[in-house]
Figure 1 (cartoon, rainbow, N blue to C red):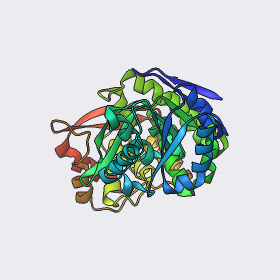
Figure 2 (figure 1 turned 180 degrees about the vertical axis):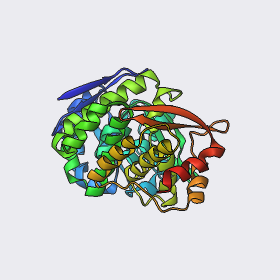
Figure 3 (figure 1 turned 90 degrees about the horizontal axis):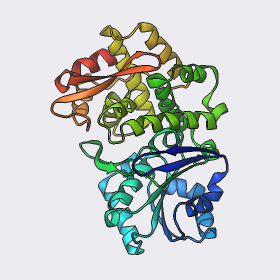
Length: 352
């Protein structure tokens, strides 16, 4: 087993090991005494891994209550969040109990927010079942739900007490979902690890899953520990996300998060090239790698629609948004830009 320690204000470990789902109960019992465990999962993930997770928890002495919801980004809202809270309240889950989030980014974000706010906070564990969640969203303590106006507009910071990552669970992912995670993997190489970027071009992510997950988790750990509450360096993790979130919204969330981030990374790099902030070779290398993983690099949504959607970005503050701008492979800058200028950045990035 590979263990990555995350020394935030409330420190925790990320365990990465093929087959470790069946030791879930044992691993959680090492950080929290057996109690009632509220297992939160979408209906698709629960059908695949719910029984194994429940059996492991019960074998370690936990009493399990299950709270499920329909799969998909459309469930990441205040209604489903309230349903999770009511499920726990109905089963009299107490402050001495624990929530276990089994699933991808939607489940982790929403269940984490529920744990952070139920009874003013109960501990929770992340068990990522998608590549995107394994390499990114399960670590760092960001929790949120969407509003009609935009993505992740309601949430808080709440670190898990443990992350259990079983790479074997990723083998059941549809190709599109796995590719979505690959976009976030490429993001890490782009923003801070040129050697890793090159490694991804030479060897498929599928052939080096544990190494890839470990590298990304360690990189995110280092950034989060420098800036746990997102006032400085942690903004680097938003590479591709400002335009990406606008694309997601324009698609009515039918486009996966990773696919939108892929387009967003290509777009912000195009805009940087047009503004003389990085060489065209950087853009060519990025697009080549994204396309090698069958990821999209352009969008046909109208520029004004993208701009209007981008104005709901939670990262806008006092009329300014901090864009993450590539300068070379493995190095990006945080560039404050007046939100009124976003339209020109989007035009430069999305016009081929």
